[in-house]
Length: 339
Ligand code: ASP
Image 1 (cartoon, rainbow, N blue to C red):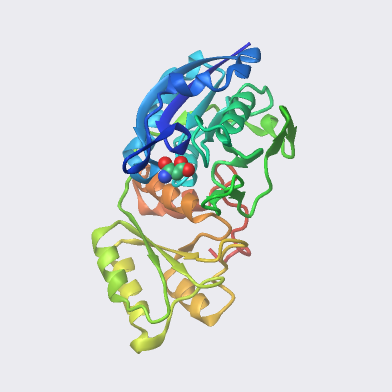
Image 2 (image 1 turned 180 degrees about the horizontal axis):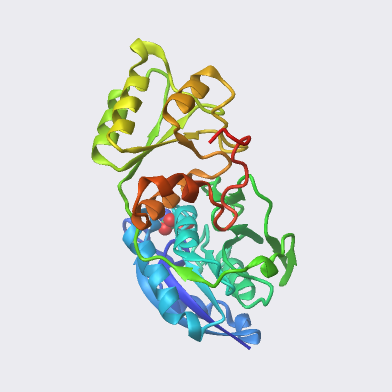
């Protein structure tokens, strides 16, 4: 019988209706009462870390979740984090950077409907998560939702209401779970060649600028002035406007010289960036050596930068850390010599 620690953080799964709408009220122990079938394959202890709508989740909460996993790591065979769906992809990616190479599974789950409703996805998601966390073949940080197991760095909430809320972006599912059976599509536990490692710092001075046609470079100036890194979500495979006297290029020059990290990303969900294709991207990449996200999700890029900036001593280490694969977060990094 496996020993599992369930960490409750709130979300719809634990919510009940009040005068002002749904709010997380159920405790971790109450959540467990809805999945008695789990007793057949595991023993579960429950810990209530907080009870938040995940809209209120911040980097300090990610650090607390990772710290709780580290504190209890030796005593349990697997971990299940119950979480709101709205920022689950960010948390799953953040935990992927804070808890690396774990031979024990860390599962992040939640639901589109509260667990105390008669018709809900919550009981299935929680039971599936406990099953996956109890599985010998499972490892690392993954989202379990609607019968799919998604690498923690590859999840994205793509539907606000349907049960199949999460997609795995630019990467296959790790496994599917049907009627209590786990079918692995990827099974590379034997590739785990390093011991589990925990990080304890994040730098949250990371901002995101989503380009729209006509945007002026003053927005970039503001964000770069107040942060250590700015991700620019540009169009298509990636580029920056050259209108208005090339103001964006001048702004990039200023902020790169000031030591800020500027990362180019794409607002297109699937297939990723490649700045080297068009002149609007290739020139800024050549002139400033900017990093780009390639096939990483935005959630992974944001949390990876927070992790890198919180754990590196010198700017020279940043490209190597950013392009180094952690929990399957990046596979494509352009042709050789393009970095
Ligand atoms: N607002 C909720 C949350 O993210 C939504 C959910 O859990 O589905 O906490």
